[in-house]
Picture 1 (cartoon, one colour):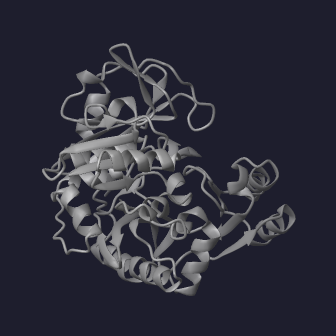
Picture 2 (cartoon, rainbow, N blue to C red):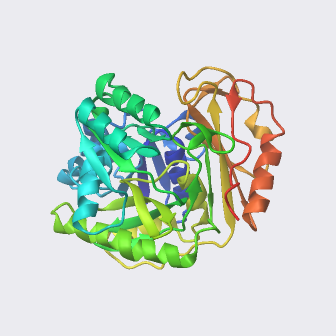
Length: 416
């Protein structure tokens, strides 16, 4: 089969690479892709928001199915556009992508279908939001309602920090239209994990769970980011909690979306926290997490291409996962997540051994690569256990000099 992966980041490179491992897949196109994907796919320089050009290309190349990586084209209706032309595409419709595109929509869905989550209120004006914060105190969580590239969440430990976040979003429009409405939630305490599932026409195939590290610096300190590293499995999350997440969160969400007339197909990502009263939803996403994809997909033993093809044909499939552990560390440009420095040369990545390098914000520079974004790449290893995988990754990262870049030295520290 021929497949086209839409997107340009580390998540999309991980998806491309998993298709490249599939005996069922003969040809992979990445649109627009990035320079680091060229060994695994044919790069097609069509922007992920140029739906007409993407459809035309897919028809010309007789592509068997399309896999969408990022949230922006999903929220803009790329799946509807392709399906209207009779093409097979894996992902949620524009209406279903609201589960990520609007925090308020997701909260209302959870409330209606008794899906456990934090108590919340929604605001469009600063004064009532500020009054709410003063009444409830800190810690408290402030979220931009719309898409904000994984950065529109502030876990405020003081009232002043919370009020400042509200001003940033509602008054200063830090996240543009995405922050014109904010959701303010109670702070939940517990261990977080990512529970992702493949969903198609009511079929649900859960993936192995993972945990990412959102904060920029060691010890989970510093500003929130899109994710600085991840690992799978997550030994501190009991099997019973994983099962409860499926029955009390994922199944009701899929059934609820169908009941609302917005059936969900694609990757349903549940960001979950295990509280003293059980698992609760922090957020839903309508696509793979990044950097979780880079540690979850390598644990899939089944042929990825054959699996997605079967899903789209509504055929049952025995999806198998490996027991081995995978841990990945994100290398970011200096200044990330605020004023990112671009253009600095990366060290010779060819010197890294027995690890997977997944490119995100890189560009070709001579015989090597240079930084071209905030999160530049991730380096991951597979091991008999997490300790083994962690040791391998940091041994390899330690071989090179990362001038102009930084990474956390403690990914996986919460596993016990």
